[in-house]
Structures are given as C-alpha cells and as structure tokens.
Image 1 (tube, rainbow, N blue to C red):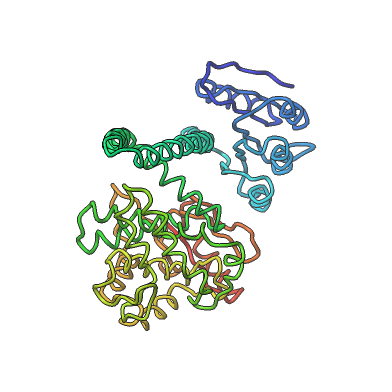
Image 2 (cartoon, rainbow, N blue to C red):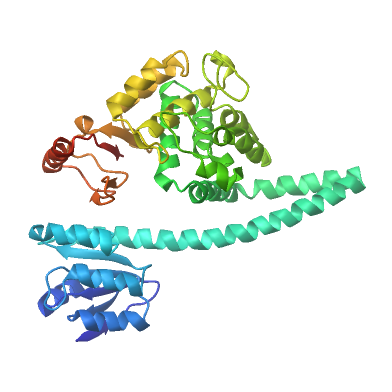
Length: 434
C-alpha cells in the first residue's frame, strides 16, 4: 500500500515505512508541512519504489512483519547509498539497532515512544547533514573550476611580467582587487586543502579539526590576541598539508613506535611550508608549519631551533599533535591511555616540549572550561567522562564495531558499561567530546 503526499520544493523527500497504518497517519500529520512524504506499510513495496525514485531521507520502524527495519535499511543502502537512514526502535531492540548502524549505515535512531519535537529535531539534523553533503560536493566542483581559472590567470600574469613593468603594476592591481572580493573563496580553499589532507592521509576529518581547535584554545589560554589565535588555528588545520607531496612509498613506510617516524615522512613540514607560502595570503602561516617538529632543546628538525627561537605556534602544534598521535594516531601501533600519554610527554618537558605550554594544554584538558561562543573538542579518559558530555567522534572498538555514535549524550548507564568493557578486555578507552 502506498500514498504520496505532495509538497512544494525545495522540501526534501522523506520515505516512511511502518506496517501499522495508524502510526503512518500520525507521522504524516506531524511531518507533512516539512517534507515531501512517501508512505509505505510493506517493505518490499518501499524497496520497489526506491529502485526507480530518488529519496533524500528514509525513516523505518524496527519491528515489522516479513522484514525488520534493520534488514530493510541495509537493502535500501544498496539501492540508494546517499540517502539518510533513520530507525524507530524500542530499547529491547538494541542489538538489532547496533547492527543497523553498522550494516545499514543508519545516521541515528529514535526511541519508542517518541516525543514529537525530538523526532522533528532528529529529522532536521539528518536533513541538515544531507544538505551539507550535497553542498560539499557542489563546492568541490566549484573549487576545481575556480582553481583552473586561477591557474590560467597566473600563467597570464607571468607572461606579462616578462614583457613590461607597467603591465606588472596593472596585473597586481587587478589581482589585489580580485583578492579583496574573494575572502569567502579563501576560506573555501582552506577547507579544500584540509579535505585534500584527509584524502591523502586517510585520517578522519575530525583528526585535524580536533588538533586545530585544541591549539587555538591553548593560544587563547596563554592570552594571545584573537588574530594570533586564529592564525595558529589555521596552521594546525593545515599542519599536514606537506604529506600530499610525499611519495606513496614514503606514506607506506610510516610504521612507527612511540613518535619516531620515517625520515622521509618527517620531511613533510618543509614541503608543507613551501606549498602554503605560494598562496600570498597564507604566507604568515609558513613558519609555524615549517618548524612544528623542532625540539625545545635544539635537537629537532629542520633547523635545530631551540627555546623561544621556535615560533610559539609551532611549539603549541607540536604538543597537541604529539598528544593526539600517542592516544589515537592512525600509524601508531602502540596507542597509550590518556594518563600514560600525559606522563610520557611530561617526561620530555624541557627536551622536546615547552614546559609552560605543556602545562597550559593539560590544564585545559582537565578543566574543560567551554566557552559557549567557540568550539572545542576534548580528549578524555573514561575517568574524566561526565554525564551530559556529548561525543564529537564515534567510539569505535578494536574489532571495528561502533559502540557509541557522534552526537550521543553520555549518561551514567553508558559510563558503567564502558567501565565493564575496560575491565573485561583489560584496555583503556579514549573518547572525544565537544
């Protein structure tokens, strides 16, 4: 059975599946003003519709005859992988819900009985996430076209420079005018560069964002001006840009113990500085990127700077990125618990790290003073987790299964289950919270 409730564009399409017509009617009354609804009571009818019609969001009940919601969402993912998938489920179905999250790519789930406002809010967040994905795809295509245009412009300018000084002055004026109107584009380019780092390194988007947010927070705690804090944030966001210049062989050789990386891999800050300095408006970022691997005692790379000779942004980024590497580094085969990572780094205060900045960083993580007007992400041991904390990254177990999802609010019951997990598997969990 199927009925379509039409809605004017640009409403997103929402497919509803529940084998109880009364529930479908209730959902239809609640959501008809916000979405273009397509309603089904039979899973096979819904799948047949998806075979030939694009849908933006799919919302399914868990308990149904013939096929449960987890199975349906898994099949729907094969047909329309870009659609957002949500599940309505009861507490007793938690095992099936976890399976749906892992196998069906479920964005979120809604507990029965639901509250109307919470259900609408969850759907609104899913819709926003869906639109952001579409916008990111369009932006990437736009940036590619913009980069081609900028390349052509630069080639033209180089020819004119060799011909006459007057032409150079005219070209500079045009470029300055163009840069004055491209402030937003610059931020888009930075986002594109960050996305390029993610693609090349295989790190999650949250990796560099977390390091950037923590670096900015340390700078602010040290009393730096907003402009300098912002500059350090951008440096940290792009601190791995040089990795795109490494060969596949260099990337493949990053088998590490502790924080000692392959020599070729350690050269990426210099490559990154050379890349960034080619973009005039990003040139002030180069020194913090170039010297991020210097040691406070002068034994680091590439220039063996020591003490205050090392740019303060580089000293901050060094501490934050090394801590993140010790507890969550993709290429770190011997990850440490948060407490052990702090102990390891304190032992190297005065040799590798600026002791004063290290104290500021660890105090920041422990006090967790969140400014409501700014973002921040914290790296926490289970002992530091509190009810009400919200995860900024999925908690993925060693076997690859997702235990808790991004955006989930922590409660006492979850904390107790995490304690049991640590005890049963003799391990330590690291969590990331907003």
